[in-house]
Length: 497
Image (cartoon, rainbow, N blue to C red):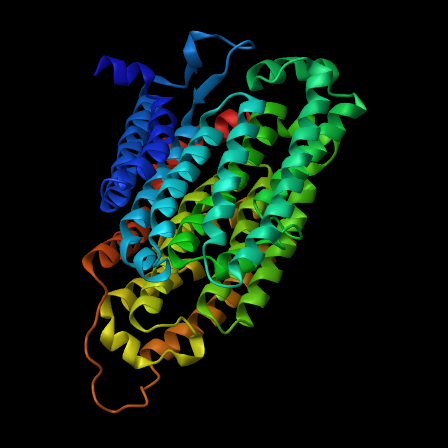
């Protein structure tokens, strides 16, 4: 137990990386081992995430030197309230999606050569996300960023006929984003001589006025803005989410863009500091206005969609905008709202994409125009969970989605950013339009056939994760004050004071 406690910051990465390698080998013995090992590894990562968060809240930030080599020579892993919180969110959502994935993967990826790689690549992606969040080294972050990105491309490409094209488009744009990040890192390394985040933070005051620092920061923010699909750098997202297999969409949509947002928060608030970043260039202001445009654009485009997954894809652009808006406000309430929305949106969008997968499994489609009351009769638990997720996305209290919007609204008022406040209010109304359209068809439109449709609810492995996430949206809403006070207030204090 002492060994686990000592090495807990690195254990999620150390556990998930070998698991991704072992899964294909174990599947040579029995294909069922692929999913079993993926679930075991992700569940262990959840347990370690809980342990790490409890440890950080009790004892303060933890620094871990890989291989015992201290920085700047070695790679440092850092656990603080922000990284421990985000790691737990990533691993918890990842586990629930993998638990749900059994039937959708078997149905949408019928070939044996696709199912086993799916689980291996999914675990590798989770490993990359864990590495991105926990590392305290800029170049190590780039390595994990590439590992997770390559995994994302693969998870998208195994879908239907249009999926490889969507994956290729994402590959091109993702590579451009990674190049921006790496070029920016080169500028910063030239000026500071270090890649360790803590060392770079200490050196920056002496060189912050140099143009190369401003260029480097701008390139990094542009690269990560593309990774998090910040408007107008969102072009890869709609097709990627729509044409990926259901199990891939449910894994990528809640997590991929949130990790990019985490990196942006880490760099702007914890390494540069918003004051120093503003001296170089008003980046937080630019991020805030771009995010406001993305909120409106994504909401309007979601209203125009006729397919549920594509509607959720455009909705994700708007939801990422809420996180960017909180970053742009650059005050404690706005930052709390942004980080809270990282968690809330991960749960909400994970739930809604899982429901879309359930619809495709039972009904054979997720076309909004073809939904009617038979879906509710056949899948009462799934449609009830969808209603909870939709109401949370709109921002109905006491569901979780309300509170992140509430903190963002308070942050906008504190900054006297009335345009941002109006954007939050208008987007909630637009959310209501496109989500109530689906709820209307499921609960109010009578099916063409008068006879009662047989009840064919999805299997327990698909139903339980959906119900857990629906219950979590209620619980997270009820406990939001404790989460903010116990975790996020500490994050905001460290970032802004």
